[in-house]
Image (cartoon, rainbow, N blue to C red; front, side, top):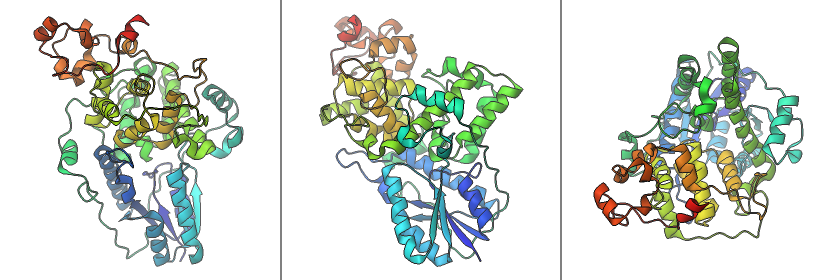
Length: 487
């Protein structure tokens, strides 16, 4: 009896899952397993927040539960355990007499360390480990260059791929699965058993009504979102025009959370978009959605090329000359959305209340932390890691490298400083009427639209008229905002 243990990781889906399909092809019986690692929920080594917030943790729990249900509907189950993955998996593999462990291939340090540890533990048991590349639109083996020759500039990367590489077809969904018998499936943990307190749990049970999308984890919801965004509403046809929006559910695809956990395959998105282009319309917006998937690929290949450098302050450029402030009080004001800069505070409060922030918002709050506050960009990246439901290590840390000027930005200032965002100009451009700021900063609700982004300039009389006292109801700015007015 040939048995293979399949380790689900960031591939919590049955569609387009090559590793799982190969396990079914090569084994008489398969044991699907997911392991919750307690270290995911530990606190940051220096700052107080958890590495994974309740929003991310809940989305993961829902995704695992959905995968278990999908497997059960096909005659199998998902074995769930809590512990150190290498120890748990090696013990289970030995218990069932597995010939191999199959899993998706990851690229960042903690994940590859687990792969190495598992391989080491399986070797004395004479059990093989086989890893499958499944996270990107383009397969790593189909790139028209070696990873060491990966272009450092996205435009060159994109041009070479579009000219010389192919996208492999997605794998077909398995219909029936023969499960290894007599293994206790185990209970899926809860937020409480993972160590979250009542305040954390309340954020999930009583979601903020101002949130853009009621994110729910799982392949089922992911595929429904894909169907809705393309086929039910045709929203994709205007994606390029609306993607920089700030309010509402439909200004962007919101696929990123399901992509991050692997509930949705980038190749599945690609195939649906190309079908949409054939059956309905092909335009700049349909191309632009694929363009965004290419950015996601690029950051994953950058992480593969540069390894742990993406997590270090010196970044992939290994710039040891840059220095950063480490003022914890100032960082806390940024993190809590109490900087006195309405556009920054609104974005941070949205993320804290919902686990989501728009792409436009992310660029602005990151630039503000690095260029205006002069703080350590790795703190910001770590805070995003904790809070964002759609956290993906490659995209998150790659983007922060980019903003901090130690990454892949070809258009940095000549003095070596990172690209600078004029926060006021951005606010007036993307939130012209102040609707977004007022949505998340109710204390500024009575301030006229034309003044809300300049709240710091309100006179005493205006503050009394609009019911907001600066320094009391809304913070005084932590930087001099007048520099944006004259720029």
